Length: 322
Image (tube, rainbow, N blue to C red; front, top):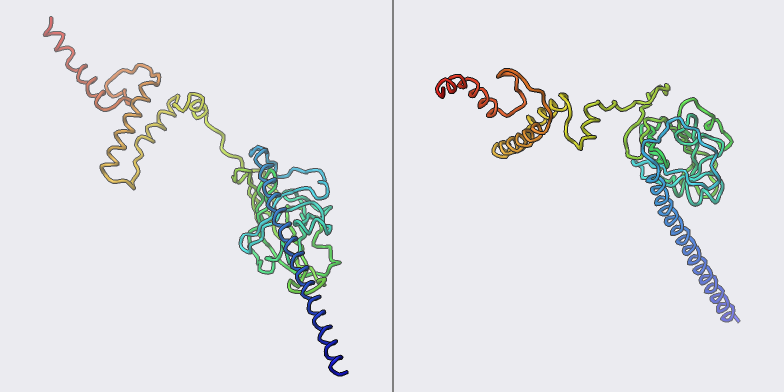
């Protein structure tokens, strides 16, 4: 009878062991499926974002543009913290389905790049795992379909889940990242970890900065690129050939420029080649007739010397022939 009981106990233990092993395999398979789904969705969303950015002109950026409220789940951009290894797609909404596949933009907060406080939420064990190592001064890059926004971390703090003061509107363009805390807590975390950053610069789709923001968040007009000169515009219209005195001066300055990193023979060959190019270019340019030996400054030195000698010896040549 004792042997029968021990045999039944061993059978039960074996059944429990197999059941737990099957559950572990099922959970591991579920995790792998979820992980692969997330990776695929992030890759596809990044590709979609880049296609949208390629279709948007690089000069159409408006730093203070106000956009309509996006639909739930809509693609808004990508958030990156290079130093801590955070890079995730941002979608509209903070519901469970959105946060499972991306970082969510908290509804009724400003969109990234707009004046106000833009709130982004993410899970501490997936997309925002690297926030545990963030510190003041770290750089945050938010890429939207029409701009590249650069933020600088100002502060981090821990608050209660009911404390929504961190999402209050602000006058300047700010960014607030929200995730659960503690990071290694098992179950539903009781606190919230907050990262607040200020906007540092806005760039277009080509990576050029179009506006700098001062540290005090003062509103300033965009820094515009210097307007092209009339001679530069004419040069572009003429297929790269300079037209006008200022362009000829620019060509002469470029002709005199020699790369100091090359050897002396190479430098001389470069000078000769540039002199030939400059001479052929100047020969095609319309010039007014000039009087005097020293007035012709555009021709090559050998041509000026020959012209001067002809003018000096012309009276003697005419007298001898007569």
